[in-house]
Image (cartoon, rainbow, N blue to C red; front, side):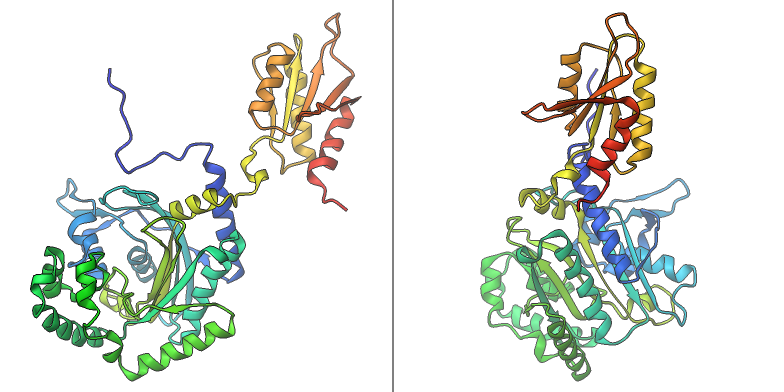
Length: 431
């Protein structure tokens, strides 16, 4: 019978990689707590109209990538391709936004039917941060500072770069889009099929083209900054000053527009050259019109999303995952001889009580000493506790504590002293 395989682009996360994910998640939880953000959880399945109204119908996500279907009631539903729309829907539905300020975060799987590539999959995972009800550039600076704090916590500060742009209001972009379309119509011969289609439906997306010929045409195109209103310019200039005061280094990228229609004013991306051509690891900005667009009271907002797979790749390739994180087992309790299983389980339980943060395995299944030691090494344990019956089969009064390295140093001690010794070795801070 043919084995059933995972769907292409929807990957299993195996035990050897799980510690990297857990390490990244723990760092993220720590950072958002430091900034006072609270967790929100919402479904992976939403009404398709939610994403069409928020992301924009003339975007790659809505046109090509969403997993959408009619359920048995005839409702058109979609797996969420990103988190902001669902977060806004949930916060609005449950009354979290009316005359309130909210700092929220979430994490979980997202789904897009795109070509799987390094760090980009059809089921992928994101961290997201969203802030509601704060109009000034100080909240923009804060959410960028949240992401910067995460890079510092992970040791990635030197490997990422912050890019910013001011895309103004919806009216500004509409005026710019008309001017850009008029310009592109004069250079149709140099445009590819995708650019020709987008120039009439969503002309700003042409700026994202990876085609060198299209980019050559765009070098002489109208500039978005010439269409941005005065209030947006003031807001953006104040943001840059705040970032400077925080010591956050940035670059202005006039081509940065982001792939979602709901953004306005400040947009940003953190990029890296450690992941090949697809270098963005975090993106976000302001979206002051989205809450009203989805049926709520007009509420200013800003946020960002981070791709977890991409960060895990970076951390592993740069060898930034601490060794102790990768080690699921600290102590392996060996039981050599008949009728020692009960004692082995009891010793392991006592060590867990004395040292709750350590990983303790009690050997199960019997076997000779050498085979059990091999299993202890294979588990990555640092220490082995050896319980060995006497020649007469009597349970031991003493045990051996062995260091699992090339030295094989071993010391004998009373069994009841083992938990305190392990606590001293693994759980008490060094002087």
